[in-house]
Image (cartoon, rainbow, N blue to C red; front, side, top):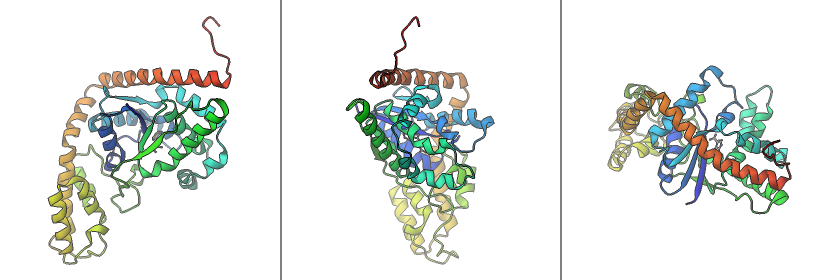
Length: 330
Ligand code: TRP
């Protein structure tokens, strides 16, 4: 079975952008692939974060992923910092990665803009991401569009390391983009992101889902209820395509064009469908939250399974690079 690896930051709750853009895809892929899903806490510390909330956010992300359908028996689900080899391999990759490549990354350019002092960790973020994937010699990396550049970079890092130390040791992983490309934020911004505050969380209660969707930006041409709209210009319509039945999607489009519905009516239907889609996941999440011990065990098992593969890769890396191998009894 081809192996896939993907990662997600421990931002706490999953939102519908994470779900449609990545997680839903992972859930489908786990049946025909050997699947490694990693909560990337070491990546999260490259941006300002709250240490006091960090542990809980990591646990909440694990709950969200399992509730969304990631099956820890099928997938190796684990926390990045539990497998020390990630940072070790990242260090090694730093020694084959030209700084120029890193400075060119769009995400680095965007994120470093907002910081008075740009930290080395932010620049080296994609090197750690390369280590994540290559440690498991994964074939495929299912991700959102915004991560394509990082996957291209990890292919270059694999090539550079292989050229220097051992031909064909690391396979070049391929990006796999899901069907739902970019999910715009509720405010119409390019990206749905928790830090932009324009999301709907997957595990929100129905009234919270409604509160968020009620405020969503629609086609600006619909100033009053009587103004006809263009569904293709409306983010609420885009979300209907993910959460409503095809016949309802058609009805939404007709009623928007013909101004038969106001945007509020249209949002009401969307909010109900979103709440309904995630209702089994809310139930599952509650069960998981009720048993923190079991959740901890699940993550420990995931880390142990990940470590087995990672340690084997690291043994090869050290050997090919000429490191002194540690022997028992030293
Ligand atoms: N950078 C990814 C994101 O922000 C998260 C990530 C870290 C990742 N390591 C990964 C994704 C490895 C895929 C593979 O979405």
